[in-house]
Length: 235
Image 1 (cartoon, rainbow, N blue to C red):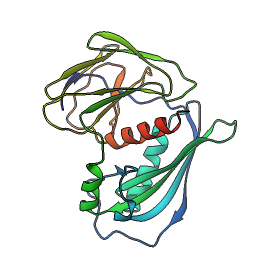
Image 2 (cartoon, rainbow, N blue to C red; image 1 turned 90 degrees about the vertical axis):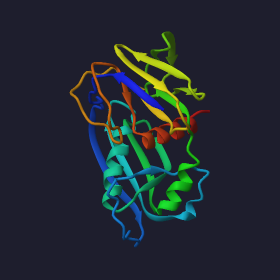
Image 3 (spheres, one colour; image 1 turned 120 degrees about the vertical axis):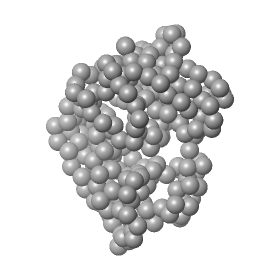
């Protein structure tokens, strides 16, 4: 898929009060190859996990005003990379009782290049996802697809499959993304955001130009995680 867009990138306003990382379980395995590219791939449920070497189970806990898992994921990712992991599977994301405390628990692994390639074949391709407010208690958020108004319910997402040669334009506020499929390509992920903050760099997003706007690109493997978690939370 080919992208051309203009957007000012800004930080997410997570309102994080406290955050902890805990290794719940850890094996003695130590990868001999360094993860120089800092790969941290989402392992699809359909992938045979026996092709991956278990390293640890890590839980991130945060107390915040928003039930948003992105910051928790980032903390686990940093810890996982230090332990030599290059992939992960999901145990759960949940709210603790009636408190404002949330936990994300991931199993982290090391996969060979062959295992990662097999897993990549199980990822969705030629599709675009746009996430709204990740909190079920949040607001429905509007945006435009090819200049037509649409709305994403809180705790949900917009999904669009692309045929070869098809082009769509996504707009939120004054941010615009033009997505065109030319060949079979990996899924693309975006999120609607109404916060006002300073510029930042998103994991895994390269070669992008930005100007003021309210739609943000999302790291592909974080995107797969978000889709998995949101689908799992549906009744």
